[in-house]
Amino acid sequence: MKMKHYTYITLFSLLAITTSACKDDDKKDVTPEPVKITFTDKKWKTETWDLVKPLDLDEDGDKETDLMQLLIECDFDDFIVFQKDGKFITNTGDKRCNAKEEQESYTANWTYDEAARVIKMKSVPSGLEKDDWEVLELTETTLKVRFNLLPEDGESAAIKSVMTLKKM
Image (cartoon, rainbow, N blue to C red):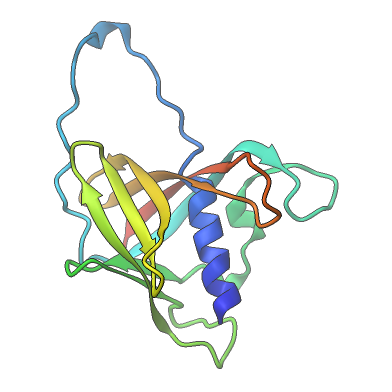
């Protein structure tokens, strides 16, 4: 059960960094308006999850950028919810990978910095800073985030990813 939570946190972290900022010469000195918190209490399902820098994650000799191809069928109906009370919920959906696994888990607390467009995640129960998810795009049906994932082996370089979530 804990392994699946770490897998999701890792995968979410990898996807958030993939998108890089582009400079538009026609829009100099334009400050984007802060994103309003419209993503709460909705079910968000992963649509895309990409690495910024290709890595050989499955150790088959080929470097991957599409993390979705590393998931198994039972993961594709999983979703997350940012509850208004600040709880981050993961749900395994109807297709569980492990029958003994809890369907729904409260894995982190979150806050949102509208000016910086950042969702700050804190692990439960430690309360330690977990991840900062930069909001790249937010509409009624799409939430695109970029975040870092530090490798378990302690290497100093972060693995960067971008994840696109769709409202269910």
